Image (cartoon, rainbow, N blue to C red; front, side):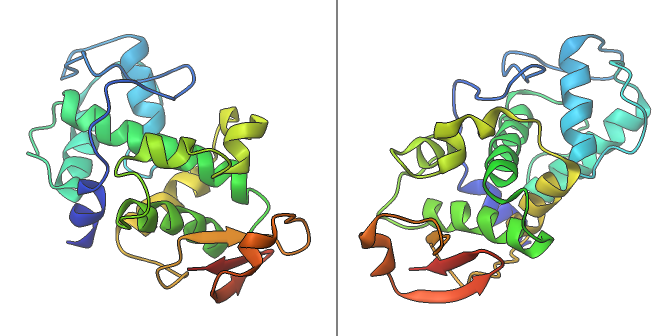
Length: 205
């Protein structure tokens, strides 16, 4: 499945950008676990469309099934236990959803998927870093990181947009840049090869 390839390029990171509640990689969450970490897990899984029950902070059968489904999609061992590898991948998902929310909150759903696709395309392009944290935090790479919108809580559409991009949907056709022609001030970006326009953004290579 293409989602396996896409998630595989999100390199393991030893820290988290995610605001409270957040996922700690040191945790091993399984059936019977309780507390803040389980709450964070359920929130992320729910927003990504994998968890469909109430957020309770208790790791029961429903949470286990949700984790198993995510692991299968991500190419992990589907044991239903949220260990370090599973939590890292969920954290990468959250990082990307926050960028999508900050950069494309007012755009259509396809516009949100497009922003997520650009992040993934950069991860596969030798001109950019090879992990999500560094791609997102490159100087002037994403306005939302620098103006604080990254810290806003993403809605479900932002998470689903990332999941769809991970599954292989790329409405930008491989673009690694995008900009709003009405607000962009750096002349360099206007010299990039335009590929398509989606909403307020022009996507380019």
